Image (cartoon, rainbow, N blue to C red; front, side, top):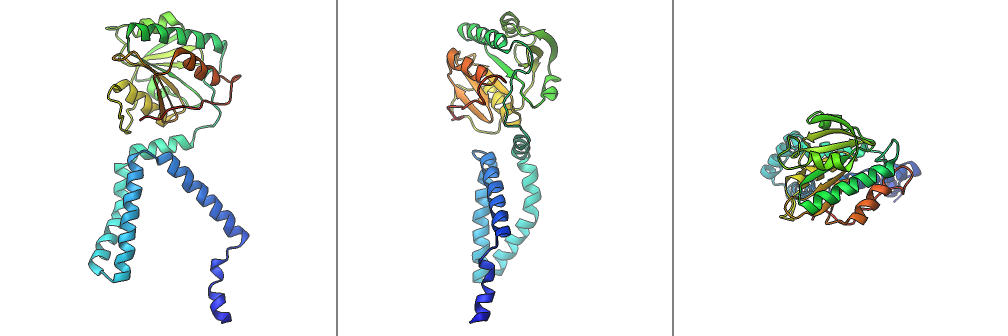
Length: 267
């Protein structure tokens, strides 16, 4: 009997084992949060199903099925790294982000907010499409380099001029760093997440894509509906009014509140 209980000692973890279990559980939970609503989550569910079939095949001694699944598992990991590279890239980028949200690191942040809100109001009322990116702690040089350098003070007139239809840079994104418009006409990565709202177009896909890969705040004005949307941390809030836009911007300033609670998902 004593020998039997000794064999079961591994079922009673020590305090070091408990710490390891908590750490692993926290990491798995964080990974699942990063991968939710992505194709990678669907892959994980599929792998779990195949693992269940493999266990059943071993119990029933189905040698052919077991051999096929073992071969699949051996080469499937490499294939998954290639197929799901966008999701993995976004997840790793999110892991490296700081929790502190600072949209404006320089000078007169509230005046910058006023200029942006005024510009967005003008663009929305005129039905002019626009996408405005505000850099946070994560640099956006790789995206700014795809556009044209501007290096101008943020102003309502400058922003509305850039997005005037038929202007050379109106199709791309404006990238703002602090109180400066760094670039215009920038190209942003498109999200892989399906957008169920048919009124959302390429601008919304680009805004959500950048928010998945960085900690930037992205403002979108729809050319079709004139609605204002905000994308951040892989989520999009659609149809915000000017008061909500100002609240989000001011809440992201260093002297403002700690962060932004997005009220709607991408669906």
